[in-house]
Image 1: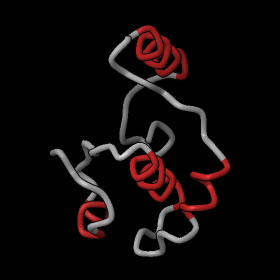
Image 2: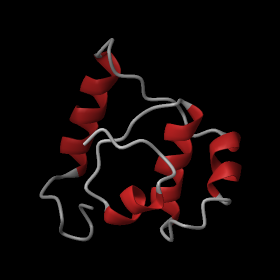
Image 3: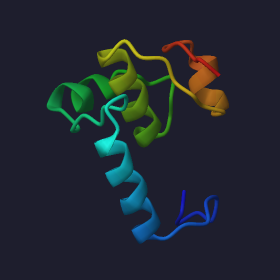
Image 4: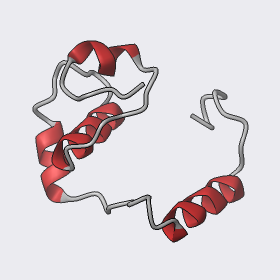
Length: 82
């Protein structure tokens, strides 16, 4: 997103956000697992590999997503909260 110009931020900004999320007891940032990578390969309704990883991880944790991504929403693969 930063590289595509969609988000105005620096790497330092991203690091601060991630560190803040890691300290938050409500937020859980799991490492990328082999299970997630392998299951993402089956989500062919979503063309972008990174979006597949997001959906795969949401499915793994039975989590809802906050997204405006039309392809993820239209896929019907994961519950969208908003």
